[in-house]
Image (cartoon, rainbow, N blue to C red; front, side, top):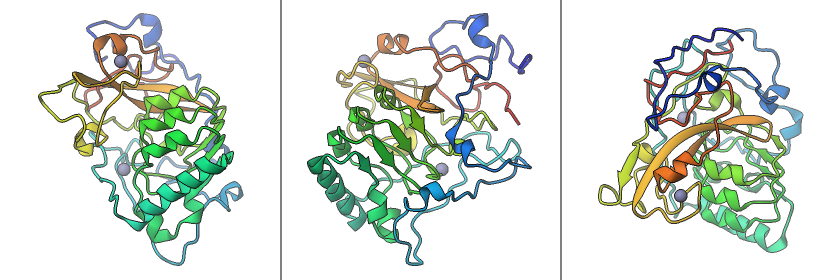
Length: 307
Ligand SMILES: [Zn+2]
Ligand SMILES: [Zn+2]
């Protein structure tokens, strides 16, 4: 790829370390994006994906003419329309909503019968689907699920408990356009070989490099109740365990972004770490992305867009 417009002084020095020249050289060894598999060639970067491949024809629940999700334009859709800065979705889950209660029941049902394919939103009405902005922590019980279908949902975040779904082989949040990031715990699902993610919805995606939300590098326990956080600021309503060591986060919280492969995609992953030692234990980011873990915000310099 040659010069990708990076300067030696433009990298975030997250841990007070300069990255090596080798890690600075961005090479697009992008795993084949499965979202692209279904996409027609995009004639212009302004094109917003509006693709409804047959593969997912049975992945959406009944419509009934009512809205099943909300539209967001957080990341733009091109280098021209991407914003200078972004913030997390601040929506909180209404746990009294019928859709949430239905989803809880569906998770329990799937956990009880040990089904290998879980497509909960197919069984929910459009208004119910619209009411669900995250998945419940009880998904940790879905240890037999190999194939998780989250097609066209209204989700804005996925909880770290997805890391307990250790049988996962196929992960399909395709066209859930409000999912701009994933929890680092998803990398615990090491059996995922196939993923289908809408690349253009992702923070830092290689197509047009929208920014990442700015993170607070350190939040001490006295500064915020880690069990009752503002999702608009921290991306989540609570942090209890470390994304890296799985130990408790009760003293201080260190948040960083890292882009890593999951299945056939490279995803922006949010790390909630208990210590600087756990941050230091993170692997290298995928080549072609910001070469060190970073705290986001408009100052982070990313490799050039592909288009
Ligand atoms: Zn959004
Ligand atoms: Zn830790």
